[in-house]
Length: 526
Image (cartoon, rainbow, N blue to C red; front, side, top):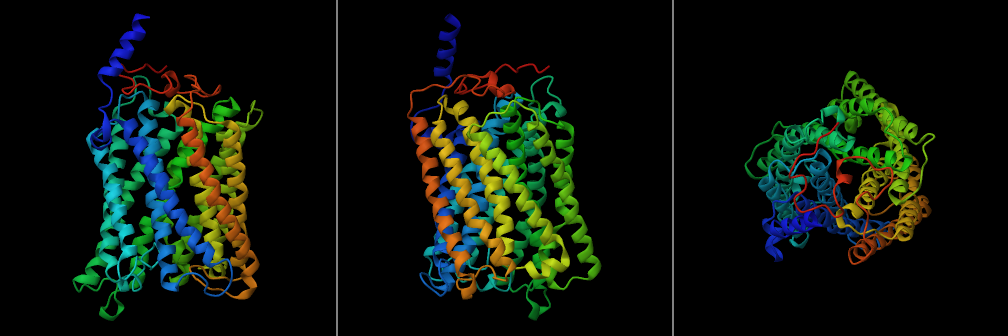
């Protein structure tokens, strides 16, 4: 009994300070992780509302609700908000919460830097969203910001560029922190090859961030100087080359899409073994596959640019390297399926999200292989087929993994169990509507409907109507997710320390919720 009293006393002594200042000045990885997750949820809804504007406009052919210029602003902002505001901060929030308790560390290696890398985000996004209220409107050149279109952006242009710079700084600082934590603060006995896969995927993602973000910063700075300082990097009339921007952008852009999916691979590799009650099949090959995907991601960038008039040898090189990525990805999918094989599986909400992830992400992977073929890509390029491809990878891929992770770790974080029935209802609604939204896009894309347009030919009307209904269904089903979160937080039902029967790892040795300062004495790993 006395030890419990001591423990409580300690918690009280070294707990968080009260009020709003707790959150502004905190250096605790759990607090910062929580702030990242709430921030990403808010941005998820803001980005979602923008998507609903797009889908409402496309419900019928003809110009219905918004002017084409605003439509373009919505397509651009939706992507920027979802990528940099929803998915990336969500993964960083999960990393903040989980990495220290997975490797047996007391906190992140650089706690003050951690606080700063979060607090940059709200200011960056306020600046980006404020552009929608300017006279010239928000950025409307697509999230890729291709010149010359982006250079015609009006007043919002420098604001967009500065906010992207700030987001990049936040990501780089976060990545440095992750690397320093993982390499320096592991519990005694935890070698690199004993780390949980989630930790591995985040380590590799952090290196990708540090390698690719500065390239984006360089590209957008060159845009800025083209606009305001008379340089001619991308202005053809002054001897510049607009296609060079695409090369620089996609050298960042393709590693970026793997930054958005590798942590998701780590999450799925954590959830599947827990509910299959088996060790992860092929741990070593998972690590090597993740590293190979990361390395290959730097030599495939020009597959976004097959139609710009590259030499044939260049096109063939990028076609083959792109197809090569399918091999390590296939290894991962095989390992997940092999982990489930003959396992004593149960289908709680996190497991459902993980299985849906495998199936739907694989569909997205296959449509990516179709896009990788140069002659085929000439047909598919800039159609809704591309939209279908990347949404299948990012929504049932990254977003499903995040939702699965929240359901998996929420009882650990809060010490309260969510409502399993509502969780499953949320999963089924989300899965049905996601497919209803994005599957028809394959068909309209193959039939030749261009992307990023507010109006379209009448033959695409039926499929677009289905996709729009699906999008609204998907959006409304996420309100159920918010209800589940709040309902869990105010419940009295406490969760056990080891919430899931098959879960393994250091985080499950802590109480639920974990103490404010976990692992003050480093645990030993056999």
